Image (cartoon, rainbow, N blue to C red; front, side, top):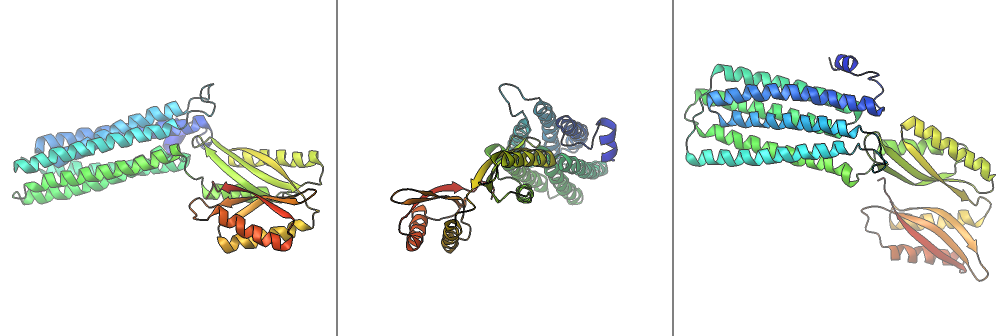
Length: 392
């Protein structure tokens, strides 16, 4: 069914890396969500009013927030599909995350209001809830519709790698669970009228469930805005592909910046033989940039690092540094090793990559490497630049 809808409403629906196609997928999913949630809100609200059930009304209001979040998602996808301009040269795709954040805040506010009203009902010590068979039918149907909607969100969200739709998917499945709880409690209260407090209690539980979902969505939507770590598989595959080119001796300082699901910028340093023709090495780098960019739909920029492949001292120094770092911390690594000779001494220059959450001491690293290097040659002087690992 989902594939049929994609074919029906989206031209070239399989080309999901295309910004326009991706935008249309998001709009389609949002429109389906608007229709489904509008029907669910109206149906549950009528049942809640006729049965005077605060739990059903709470569940209806939850669907109203979903209706609003679908509209926010629709606007978000429409705005995020705008082309880059002079003020936003990287495009507008991060608006999708902002729309998801707005949805999350609405959900949390509704949850707090529901808790407040339900507590007032418990304090009053009365409940006017009076359930009927038709209310069970409506609730059961709404559970099925929410599961179907969640599956639609999951399918389209996975297809276009959408954080916003993934959040809506989780919210839909959560709603199906909360409505199931309302259905079970209403059936119990239908047969046991003395349990007047059950309706308000379930309403409070649903509200907490709503707030928890909202907080989780806040985390999921703000993480890309703050700057989360890149997809590990993407990084691994890019590095592997670059290393497979003849003439590439190594790769380091790989960084990934995302400005939206289809706007990914990657930069790295690629080591080549410093004694080869510069124009040939530059041509190699150009080919790598084009091939990798086309393959992964990214924009790759490479800095070419020439390596001294004829200096017999470099392998010895490299081995000393490597063993020293591994003895300190297995997560430490280094790159850009070179020897700059002078009249009185020679500088050993290289970069050490520190783990993000490691507790290693830069001074300790410097002292231990210096100690081991001096044993090999007392005329060597260390110049270490400490880098951070941005991909792990």
